[in-house]
Image 1: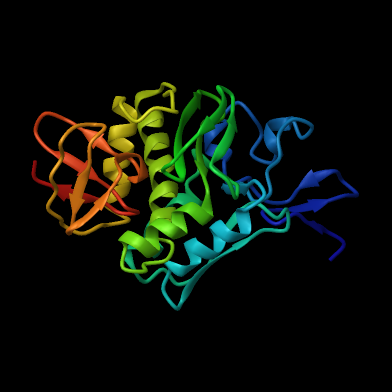
Image 2: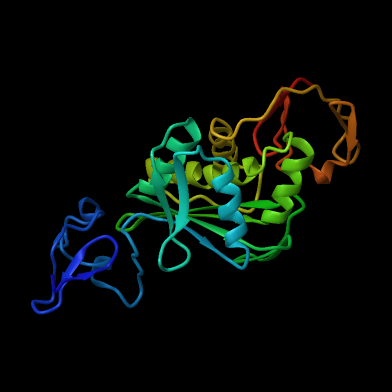
Length: 265
């Protein structure tokens, strides 16, 4: 045809114009709908106009875990840039539909930063997480929407799945992605940014609860002595700092191993 295909739209190089409307054109009414990257391609990269991106040295492992949670007619793959998540096939299950929604969302970008160890380099310095994941918060911008971050260690999350999720491989990883996206939804609805790197704040608690609706856990009984004591979960004693996303509140204690475990105090 003589046109150049860039994944989301065709480019007519002779006329120097795009031949289709950008998927995010409704976000930028001040720009022509045929603009690319908000007319700033040096700073911004837009592989397909809609993004969940996997970065870091262990992104392939994260992709494998997420695919393990999809149905046989639905799948995920990385785009030509090696980091943009794309959905393929028919979304049959609740998890399929949730992932498709996150990928197709026009206003929220989720960056999943994946690495093999549990020391994450963040804007707040090096943070060590025994949970295998860190809620990174969300940045809101009136012009460009929301950028949400989540830091994950696929190897640690796979271990949690094997130990606590009845070998439901990828359950915890799906929760981490959904948690970042839910935090982004909150930022978008309230037109503000939310800090991450802490479990005891309103945005984290909301995001964690919403993510739990997608990556579900099972019921359990729990006995807690104190923060430095021990928990008895399904008759297995484990240390408190080995439990991912441990939350205390006056009414109940909630523990999540990939999904969500509601427990009576």
